[in-house]
Image (tube, rainbow, N blue to C red; front, side, top):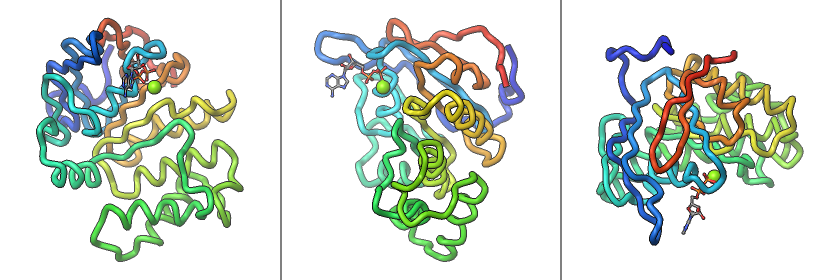
Length: 234
Ligand code: ADP
Ligand code: MG
């Protein structure tokens, strides 16, 4: 299996080494390692309860693992002070959730603008940049995001995750709430993002049809990640 991005020359945006995490008596991760580079997409699959969402929470710095290191754009986030962690998260990471998790009373534009205002001091041209992203991602104008379809809401959530130009985009079951056709179109859009926006993409999903679109697919099993050797389908 080879990708255009597996050379040592491409910059890593995420380097996880020796990650271990214990939940009570259960070892959720034992010795988990993962390197993800700019322009690359990785899908992590595994059954419900295997720890996929917990892995993303660790990368976001919301959960402190028992052991190991996790470098986001070169900075180890394990043990980072809260203020520096929050700044790194705002600058380097974007996150897409299963249900979009937008503010329903706000327009799609205001949902995206708000994410920029919360993260940046530079407010210049924010509305124009947000509108351009929504146009690029095919989100129609709407007074409230409640008026959007499920797929349009997920595209808005993608725009919100991209507005601060993250080096690494994370997505937790991003197509889990969509019908089959919308799922396919959303997955196609997601896995095109590393090429279009120059970020890395880490998607966790229990859906093999979605995972197969990534450059690399890994399975979370027995606390570690193992490669699944099948070819990228699209
Ligand atoms: P997945 O996303 O793969 O379905 P999760 O990461 O959500 O799995 O959960 C992994 C395991 O950790 C599950 O057994 C779940 O019950 C447990 N778990 C998740 N969050 C917590 C928590 N806050 N406290 C205790 N156990 C938790
Ligand atoms: Mg989950």
